Length: 420
View 1 (cartoon, helix red, strand yellow):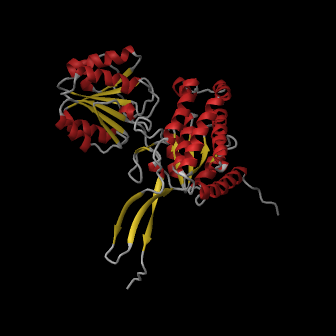
View 2: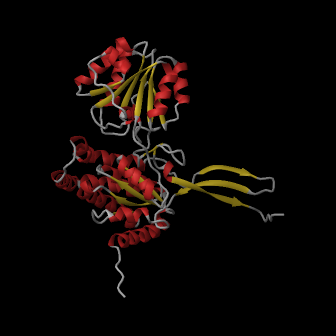
View 3: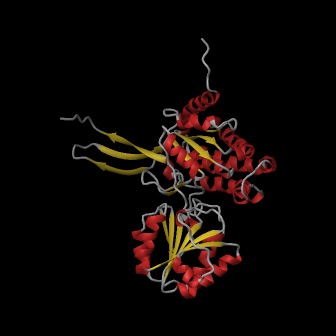
């Protein structure tokens, strides 16, 4: 009797088994070997830059999406160099493995140690940004995890070219090529197979839009480390330095509008809104930004577009900013609690007490004082790169780097003790 075999499931099973074998070597590898692989991968990326850009040109030629999402897909020499630098920065980090997190001795003489260890096999599902594959590979290698990558179909050729450079680095370091694998085609069934791969994959990390993350959370039989929308807020307190507030808002919203750390909502205290809000919105409008404002903001600037139902809960990822006037720190935090996604929030103020109230009273993964929300980034945190931003409350929060890609186990040393 002939039984049809799902090709995608077969591909995934083969990759998972190879990854499991690779982890046995990778988890025991020296820090120097992993550093060698990362640095060799960076060199290979630089050498392969023409091939990577040619592959990216093929992807761009077939792309049908919005200009903002097209920019996520686009690679140039600067972005490829950024990937290489990211791998080198990851290589320069301290070894996250084998670290004694804590230790203690019980009255019976047993010595306990909690030791950092790799998670195992990471399944990384991402969309248009090709650089995510390089970042994920680098962070997983540094933390002793094998990774199976599945990038978006839009970036398939770019992802394959980047993967080839990473594999060359593994080869030069004498580590198994199966430490970093990538989906062999754009068959969406491969994603479904990953989500069902309990026992083959230890952790799924989705990085992309709300649709992708929601699907993975709903369908995965494998534990998921994920993020919600990047509904980031910047709150300008009554005691803000006005010049600082204007500078930060331009960066927080307009540096890059398509990243999850971009500010999507401006909250401003009623006490300073009549004088400062027109200046801030004029700055942003000059950079091409449009606005969705509440009634109190429109009392100051009647020409603003009224905010529709749901606008304050929308991650724009575009040159659009939601605007609301609030009455102090508590009102700002209440607005964030109603509409936010616990990603990143910022307060702009010279009042240290107000800042501490906001920093301690906001439950988001990252909270900043007098700085742009766009600093929510693994590289800016000193992690070299990030595999994503975690907004859940279990295991990791904020930018996920090498330390967050480890778990722990216990070592117990005795001298002949038996339990009474």
